Length: 335
Length: 297
Image 1: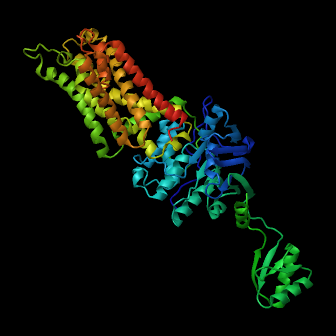
Image 2 (image 1 turned 45 degrees about the vertical axis):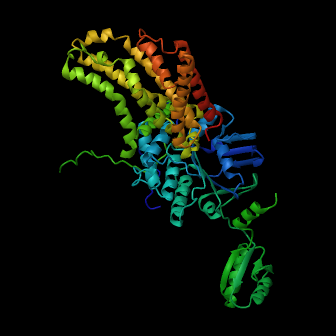
Image 3 (image 1 turned 90 degrees about the vertical axis):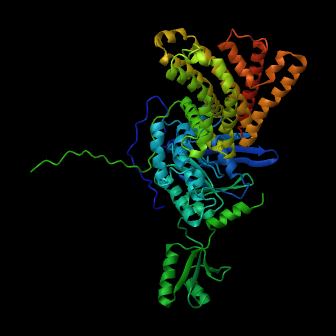
């Protein structure tokens, strides 16, 4: 994302008015970015959301699920675009049942839809100015913000061109820019990398990651691609057939096992020697040496034994459930 | 040792920052939507090709008024005619009669795209994810449609009035003589604007294809007119002429602008008002139902 220019700039900020609503930074005191309790939503015979109860508190949360799992529906419910049949939804501590608070939510949330939604006869700059004004910014502020945000997503050169001349990647950036133009506290991104080539995808993921890490904007992003979520999010929410299937942290923590060990030479002899030094082992399904408990003491014994025997360590990998395994398991469990 | 010069340059950091300024009242968003819609309909900030048709029609709508102001300005009193001002050459009611078809063409081709283009591009989910409510969206679009029709109805009438004041030998006295014209032309323009806006926006709300809305608008104006003409020919009842929807706002404006004219061959004021109100209520009702209940999706 070489051309983007996001940063913690304080230049150009204006003090908030005393009587008019202002856009501020969400704080932990305001509670979770999204708090759903028993949310149910049906479209005819289709149960899009089925008693979903979830709290999204992480700086960046990924929403995973197969097609039709309810990701987009949950996002639209969070934006107040859809009213659930039952259940309670709070966004940034504001209750969507209240029309006043729903309007506040929309002022503080940015939304990047998945589908084509850009007016093709406008330029990227005109669109951002227009959306900013619809969100309540003055024309002067809207113009300044549009320039900033288009620069941030790397569209400063093309901002005056008509959107119908944009590539898919540029359209995705334009959609992201309009979602950020009013300085939201929470930004909801529906499949932001959809249809992008590897380079465009990488740039988009970099921008999304910076939103939460550098700018303090809470991010709720949906994707089919686990790798996208791993690179951009701190937490994953998995939906399956409209129900919450899993919610877990993305962060990789050092665990004390189990691990799978592969060394040069005779594996069985090395395993026996390890057992002789008090490290319990077992054979893995791939023929490696499994170590059930791999704390510092066991790893030191392993290192010393390898040095003593002149054995090379080829690999030492986590043999527990990986994030991918657990997500796939959550998505494929029978309902 | 000399003092370093005082710093005069300012470094502007144009990188992205969080916005912490104050937000404006909601009505400003409605006005912004209306202004943007008017500009897009006229092709402003778009390609030259997009400007040709709307500006051609706007020019055509102003042409009679320009001629009416320009002729006395250039030639002075017209010999044999006795005309001394624009209104002596072309009255407000006559102007509306002359430009009626142009107004229809402008309204039918320009107004539906206020809605159809955004339905086609699926922009509504983007708009409604902002603080803009469906009702505010409808209000903004109605405001834009009314402003566009006023541009080609009220605008030329204002040109006649203001042009007359400016070229009069005694502008102040002329202005005082025509003080009552202001509310009359405003009312006449209002009859046109609401009527055409309601019809065109209702049709535009029913389809994402502009061509269907344009065709529907023209058909709605012409088909009842033919039926009304046939029924009038058979029965000689002037009320049937009120089925000619193009002339409903013109004749209503006639009652305001030229109250002394012979109207024996024109539907009565009550019939015209009833048809006008019926069309406006039906059109706006359709619009509101489509967007406020169905969110126009």
